[in-house]
Image (cartoon, rainbow, N blue to C red; front, side):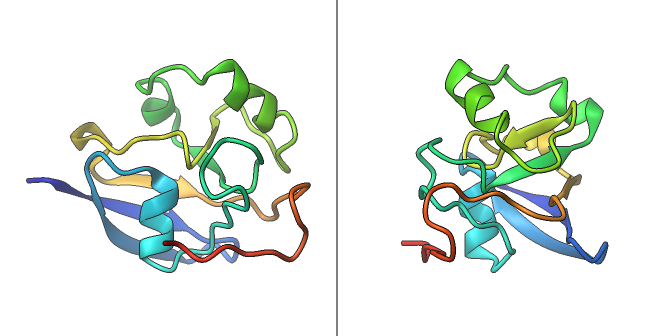
Amino acid sequence: KDEIIIHWKQKDKSIITTKGQIGKTLLSIAHNNNIDMEGACEGVCACSTCHVILEPKIFNNLPEASEKEEDMLDQAFGLTATSRLGCQVIVTKELDGLTIQLPSATRNFYVDGHKPKHH
């Protein structure tokens, strides 16, 4: 099985359930499923607009965030102890069934209003 189930908790608290391909980033899966996750820098870890809040048990089992990701997270709106950037989290089978909380807002220092289309 090379797909998992992901639950996306939207800003309005509604949940959208999608499939996610193992080996892809949360950001690319969000874009492929029309989930409202910005990703202004197009996934190169140069902004914080793909900020996601993960369940503690999922967060604790992920590889540690790089220093670059930590620097970007410092600029994220509504940062939590289990925040990560969606462009840096690679989907594995262990993440099957996870719920991802999207923050109530994002901060875009990149280009406000620019919403890249997924290629």
